[in-house]
Image 1: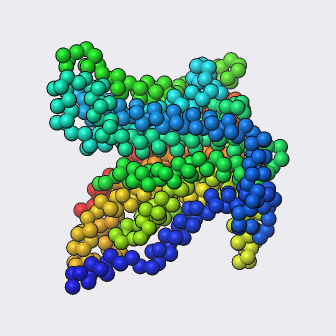
Image 2: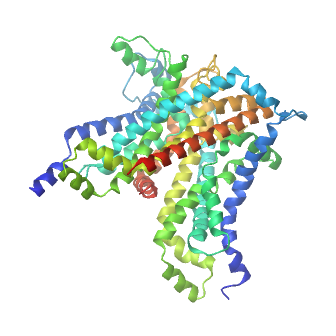
Image 3: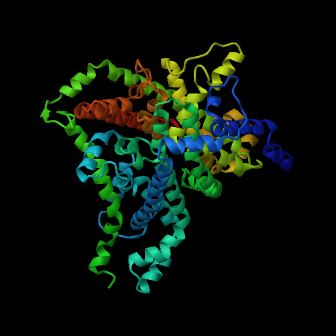
Amino acid sequence: MTTARRRRIDRVPWWVYVLLVLAVLVAVFPLYWMFVVASNDSATAYKMPPRILPGENLFHLSELVFSTVPFVRSLVNSAVVAVAIGVGHGVLCALAGYAFAKLRFPGRNTLFLIVVLTMTVPTQLAVIPQYMIMSELGWVDTLQALIVPGLASAFGIFWMRQHIASTVSDELLQAARIDGANSWQIFWQIAFPLVRPAAFVLGLLGFVTAWNDFFWPFIILKSPEMYTAQIAIKALQNSYVVDLGLAMAGSFLATIPLLVLFAFVGRRLVSGIMDGAFKG
Amino acid sequence: MRDSIGERFAPYAYIAPFFLIFGVFGLFPLLFTFYVALFDWNPVAEHTFIGLDNFSRLFDDPRFWNAMRNTVSIWVLSTVPQLLIALGLAQLLNHARLRFATLFRMSMLVPYITSVAATTVVFAQLFDRDYGMLNWVLQQVGLGPVDFVQSTWGSHVMIAAMVIWRWTGYTTLLYLASLQAISRDIYEAASVDGAGNWKQFRYITIPSLRPVIVFTIVTSTIGGLQIFTEPLLVSRSAPLTCGPVRQCQTLTLFLFEQGFGQFKFGYGAAIGVALFVLVVAFALLNYLLSTRIRREKP
């Protein structure tokens, strides 16, 4: 009786698969469509009924993309910014998370409360003074204006503190301390290696966010050779001939690096997001 | 030896980068926004103190109220369906014996790694009046072409569709993680006691998901009120206003237009202050509603 009930509960009805496959199609279709238009000639974007199969013209439109804007340069710029933020964000947040989780110092709880509170502050609204500061620093139209503000975040510190608190045992740290290691050595030799998977996922989230960021680069970057890939897409959309095919090809080319990355680390990204989620 | 000066100050050094970065590029600019809002401030000319004039002008400015309406409309249209779809998808993905579970989860995250700029370019094409696939489908079933970009509701629906497409998978994974943390024994006990699917959903699933639901509402509110890139890229003819009659200009886009399009830093800052008040008000409302719900629960 119990086994029968359990089997009935556990069997997955067919319509669940139908709905899920439908959801996957919706999730993937816009990317596929980008590829279809990008791999045909420009006119495909304007065909009725729409063409739904890829063509062989990817290289032609790509060449056009590369000659209209400094697109390779923009991909390099995006990579520099995203890698710097990914690595810096992972390490700096792990360090701060370690201090909040495992070290004792006056004001610790108050400072951590402040970190948590800053998560709810929408700083994007302060974009005008932010621009003025960058202007004072002489950082307008530079990549460090994009990198430095993204190096640490309250969310990242919160996330790493949780992981370090639950993964790194106090006994281990105590033993290292008795052996004469200082807190810096303990962090690099014991704590960080233990939470490297979590720091990796955090760095990955920072990388993706930085790669896809539009608002701030759009305000800061002025000259075409400083453009990131996202701003290059905007420039393609604006080019003197309005050509949707070109913008689609650019969008597709700017998304490929992330798709390749996702093929390798997507599984870890999924479990990372789910691990960091609320569990009651 | 353990209590050397260096060791005592080490923790502060470890957390200093965040506070430095947040102070310089977050908190200070935020406070400075309130100051700039009191001036007639042109970046290349003099700036003069004008008190609260920017705010009284703002409240009389129909463009401000238009942007406010657009922002709230797009936020509602994108948030409500997104959270409901995510809840449904999470339920589907939560079947214990689901095959290809990893593949399904990964596919859900593909839109999240696609940039807003790329998303907007594709959706603008799909929703195009003359050459869009969506309109082609609509015409096959006998519905006339809809000019999504040029109409108010059409452009809102289109922008909401982009937001929903990009964020639903991410939200689904958050919900799924919470669903998996609920013990299956609770459901079995409930079904032994005769509770049907709906009752189980209402009295077990929803209360267990409450924290993550509140979290996603808060984050989508903060994100939704600051929506910028989609409306900027939707209209090629008039990007800064999202079309000739400002049909989808949001508050952040209005801020950008005034601040960086017309170099009225003071007026732009006043829009920033108004947005800040709005976000804080929504956050408080969320907080009050969620504590109230918690109290009503037995």
